[in-house]
Structures are given as C-alpha cells and as structure tokens.
Amino acid sequence: MSTKFTTQSFLEAKRANNKITMLTGYDYSMAQILDTCGIDAILIGDSLGMVVQGRDSTVEVTMEEMLYHCKCVARGTKNAMLIGDMPFLSYHISPEEAVRNAGRFIQEGKMNAVKLEGGKPMAETVRSIVRAQIPVMGHIGLTPQSIHVFGGFKVQGKEQKQAISLMEDALALEEAGAFALVLEAVPEALAKLITEKVRIPTIGIGAGKHCDGQVLVINDILGMYSDFTPKFVKQYAELKQTIVEAVGGYIQDVKTQQFPETKHTFSMNEALLEKLY
Image (tube, rainbow, N blue to C red; front, top):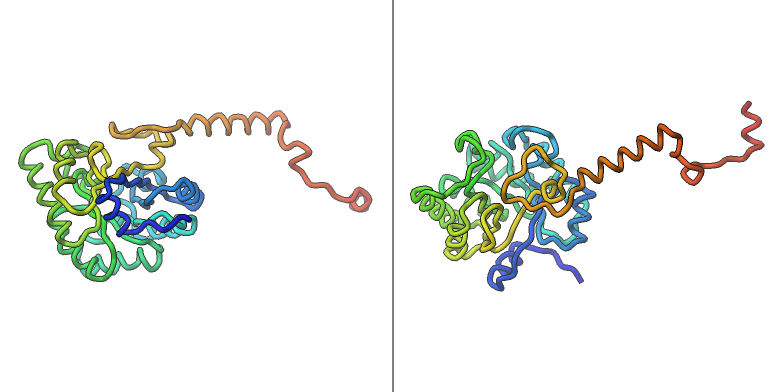
C-alpha cells in the first residue's frame, strides 16, 4: 500500500542513502500521472511563469497564480509530497507577511510545505515560517528570482568567496529549521561537500549526482519546452514532436472529412427526425 511522502520521509531517505525524486507539476492531469508513477514529491514551481505562461522569467508570477496551480495539482495527488514555490515578493517584505503567505499555500493551496529562495538573509524568515508549523524547503545557488542581480542564469559557487558563502547559506538555513535544501547550478564538488556537511537532505538541479535527490522541470524532461534548455536537463521524451504530429493528423482528418467517423457520432430515431422537416 502506498503511503504519503512527508518531511520525515525526506530525512529518512537521506539517512538510508535512498535518493529522493522530485519533479515540477502545474495541473491536475499531470499530477495524477506523476503520482501514479510513484514520484516522491511534486514542486508546484514558479517556473510555470516561463513554461506555462510564456514569460521571460519567474519574477512576474503572483501569489494568486501560484495558489491556482497548487489547488489543481493537489486535486490530482494522493501520495506525493506537495511543495508550493513562494513567488517573488511574497516573503521578502517582512517575516510576518511571509508567514501569512506561506499559510495560504497550506490552507488554500492544500500544500504540505513551501519553498523559498535565498540563504543567510532569509534565515529569520524561514525560522518564522517554521515556528508557525509550516515546513520550509530552502533554495540556494542559482535562485531564478534573483536573475537581475546575477545578470542571467549563471553557475554559482565556482569562486572561493561564492563557495564559502553558499556553505554558510546552507548551514544557516539548516539552523533556521528548513527540512531540505535545493542546490541549483552549483559545481558538483561543492554540492557534494554541502550535502556531507548538512544533516538535512539536498535536492540538486544542475548540482551533480551526490545530492540526496534530484528535481527537474517536467516540461523540460518531456521535451515540451524549447525556448531554453539548461545544460543540466536530460530529455526523456520528445512530446513536442508527438503533439505536432497528432495535431497535424487531426487537422488533416477534419479537412478531408475522415473525422468524425460513424463510431464518433450519436444516432436518433429516424421517424422523429422526419417530423422535424
């Protein structure tokens, strides 16, 4: 019998060296598929701003948009842990507002936890949210909401000062009560060291195989989003081409009247039909 994956499951997986699997999800149908496949956790990521809404970055995504997608995913999930991505400015203004918004993810979005970006400067905010009995997943390295500060999507931690800062960020988030930590676009050796130093699980995305688990964007691994493909993405399917061929076949069948066939239609009493003329 399947059981719900929880924050405790994250910790147990790290201790047992059992790799954690996580993917993003944005709607009911995909959530059902991921849950049936046995994925450990689904991140309702603000990456939806790019792969669903067609924006250039994640910074325009709002709380209301995130909550809408969270509700959709929650309806299609039974066993996977659900983690809501707190969008830009939903946790930056004050710890009090951060707690209030995190609470909305739990109450309205039916999430099991929230994720927020940032290291040491966000430690007090994480501590406040955890104090309100809301599990928090941290996120350091390349933090997409800070893209304007970084000057683009760039690997973080290659220089000594950056590497030391990332280690301090990880330890600060652990101390603040985060149950897990996303490491994005971090050199593999540094991610390995951070994973060894912290007691909480690390989830890598472009951070190598030594993290306690991995996360990728579902649209990327299915080959459905082609505007930008990061180096760390592995495509497991090319559904964009499959969809193109399917839609092309539909258009052709409609134009040539090969669809709908009799088996796709409904009949009625002929005598009744004649009375309508």
